[in-house]
Amino acid sequence: MNLALWIVAAVLAAVALLGGITKVFVPKEKLPAVPGGGWTGGASAGFVKTLGVLELLAAVGLILPAVAGVAPVLVPVTAVCWIVLMVGAMVTHGRRGETALVMLNLLYLTMAAFVVWGRVGAEPFVL
Image 1 (cartoon, one colour):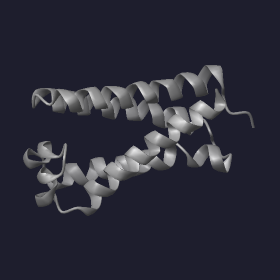
Image 2 (tube, rainbow, N blue to C red):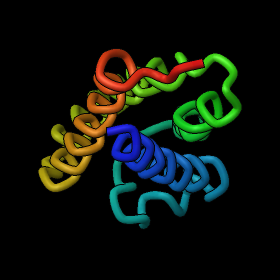
Image 3 (cartoon, helix red, strand yellow):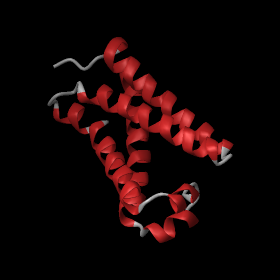
Image 4 (cartoon, rainbow, N blue to C red):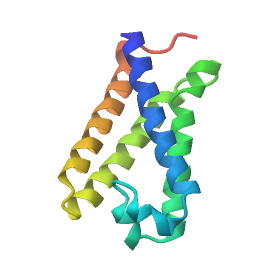
């Protein structure tokens, strides 16, 4: 179970890292052409960059606290924050009729819920 939780957290961290890097470092004008980035056309540059920074923080928060052994409780807290972010993403893509992206976000939400469930109850980090 511990290995599965690490793998899921690592996959989510990689997704968050890729999304965060894209939103922070790719110019906003180019983002609508990126697959799944059509929503950015109607969003401000500051909003997109803020989401990117939150995704970068999520990438760090899903892995680093547990690896460093410092405040590993931040891993499930970060996963809860990721769930909230995915709900927002699902609403945004749902309004645009992007069903495939809604389903992808639902998968990420489910993975984050698994991390929360596992790290709070089934397999908490032992210090």
